Length: 142
Image 1 (tube, rainbow, N blue to C red):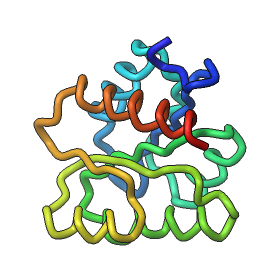
Image 2 (cartoon, rainbow, N blue to C red; image 1 turned 60 degrees about the horizontal axis):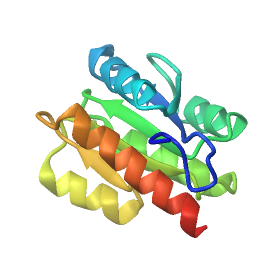
Image 3 (cartoon, one colour; image 1 turned 90 degrees about the vertical axis):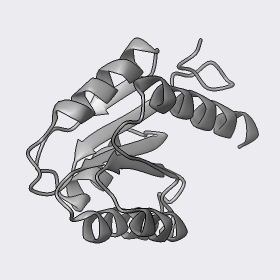
């Protein structure tokens, strides 16, 4: 199954809008595309705090967190999610995301531990392929 890991378990992804950003159409479209591809998606909704996202990710035993940010607060909110995951012993949960993020910030965030960032114009197919390939392959190794 395309939305499953090597053991046949469905890939579980939590998607969230962190901070005060109220634009949720993009993350809803991505969440739907992932669901249609067989991925189990937990969408937490708008105005989530980093603490809420990390707590939900741990409780839901997800493989990854997909964060959508258009507010410009990516250099504050995403590092806080990463810090909290490490603090809670859940650094194995990969973080990816998308939004309007300058190239220099993408590089900085990836150095901090973000697995992948998507920018405007990325196709839904590319995001779905990333999730299937990254999380399916990850499960077969570890």
